[in-house]
Amino acid sequence: MYKSKRISDSTIHRLSLYYRSLAALEKSGHQTVCSKELGKREKLTPAQVRKDLSFFGSFGTRGLGYPVRELKDKIAEILGINRTWNVAIVGVGNIGSALIGYKEFQKQGFHIRLAFDNDQRKIGSLHKGILISDVKELKPLLRKNGIQMVIVAVPAGSAQAVVDEVVEAGVKAILSFAPTNLKVPEEVFLRTENMAIELEHLSFHLAKPYYRRPARP
Amino acid sequence: MYKSKRISDSTIHRLSLYYRSLAALEKSGHQTVCSKELGKREKLTPAQVRKDLSFFGSFGTRGLGYPVRELKDKIAEILGINRTWNVAIVGVGNIGSALIGYKEFQKQGFHIRLAFDNDQRKIGSLHKGILISDVKELKPLLRKNGIQMVIVAVPAGSAQAVVDEVVEAGVKAILSFAPTNLKVPEEVFLRTENMAIELEHLSFHLAKPYYRRPARP
DNA sequence: GTGCAATTGTGAAACAGTTCACAAACTGAG
DNA sequence: CTCAGTTTGTGAACTGTTTCACAATTGCAC
Ligand SMILES: NC(=O)c1ccc[n+]([C@@H]2O[C@H](COP(=O)([O-])OP(=O)(O)OC[C@H]3O[C@@H](n4cnc5c(N)ncnc54)[C@H](O)[C@@H]3O)[C@@H](O)[C@H]2O)c1
Ligand SMILES: NC(=O)c1ccc[n+]([C@@H]2O[C@H](COP(=O)([O-])OP(=O)(O)OC[C@H]3O[C@@H](n4cnc5c(N)ncnc54)[C@H](O)[C@@H]3O)[C@@H](O)[C@H]2O)c1
Image (cartoon, rainbow over all chains, first blue to last red; front, top):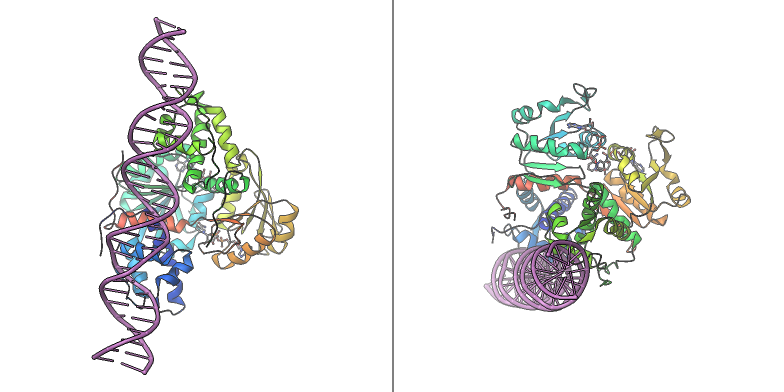
């Protein structure tokens, strides 16, 4: 049965993976799927799949598996993606533009409503259909537009100042691409995506000699 | 003492964090740093810092701490970032362009040498100083230029085909931005960066009611 | 030198996450 | 309706990671 417990980050991450597999299964006309099959698709053990789902309830039928459509909807509900979210982007440079140009976010319900910059040459112009506002207007505009998530794509040196404003505007979820440590109050959820660290991870593996890869099943 | 053991992904990730803190400390003129201070900067316990480092040797002085410069260099060696790497990007769209335009990679020793696309309008043109080659030339050019890492930034549907070619060219490290499961042989190291999943993680936290955040120390 | 304060390096303990294994529950065939 | 065959849901066992706690060192003041 459903238990109110701390859900681990890895479980949340895997829910997103299950969701994608289920969407694919639904498209290909499958009515049900068992934990073994779902596990195979995401390179996980069947037990892992069942345990993850069991934190949120019991959605399967013994002897049969899980109803694809229903489980997908249930995971969407758990992840909060059965609805739309109002997102703003601060910093319309390389990364900021790329994100604005990515139409899949929109399709998934993450609507990019506002974009901000502090460069006078950009402010006031349209970027892929989005008007770039002055970052001085950040706080009131976030409030006025009911923005729930902010993506921070400014240089590392400006990130903390931007985050502080975002927090003051009452936003509780921030995704930052700046490779720097940011302080936020307890109740604000912040994730930092650091691509350089991903490359360093690759380089660690190429450089060895410290590491031995585990055998794969 | 140094032990040849499986090093966890989280340890590798933290080494990257330490490296950044050490670089900052060096810049601000610090000669030494203790595990407590380093831990504070990265929101980790001192024990965690010492344990991570202990997998690779003993670099500190009891009673004093770690020599900033030396430890930084040692971590660079462990991560394989005390050298340069030849990187290629496949897919010069939103994300591919953003990465090519990001000068920090270059400064860190990740040199983007080649870029590929399959769009005739892009092939042959210069993009921020990089010539865009035809993806048909992928295999021979990767080989000829001694490319060690490839960043895949093509649509999900094309990603597996691209990865297959990259693998055939003998590349052993791949970073993919395509939100899809990719197959690679045992000896190839693949990481997938999925930004949509990051947003879903934010949304999970906003959506609750399933999760309670743990108190912070 | 001696002694005190600081801090490392590391087994051992505690905690967290994953896998096992099996009773329970269901399907579908006969 | 029964029974063989599946597959779930979940405590328990296991495995991996983090934190604790302390002996071992070292720096530095006097
Ligand atoms: N481009 C990449 O591939 C990449 C990769 C990894 C990390 N990052 C990080 O992402 C962030 C953005 O990188 P980028 O390459 O897009 O940089 P960029 O310089 O191209 O863009 C930054 C944008 O932010 C704007 N800006 C600066 N200060 C601002 C402020 N206080 N308020 C509002 N806007 C402000 C600038 O005018 C510019 O348009 C950086 O922190 C960078 O380290 C980028
Ligand atoms: N843009 C984003 O912010 C973002 C965010 C998350 C994930 N992604 C993922 O990153 C990938 C790229 O996204 P994007 O927004 O840059 O897409 P895009 O369409 O802007 O760019 C893709 C580029 O790849 C090229 N291409 C297509 N097939 C190719 C092939 N077989 N060989 C070589 N080149 C090929 C296209 O010509 C295009 O230039 C996608 O898988 C996308 O899902 C992008």
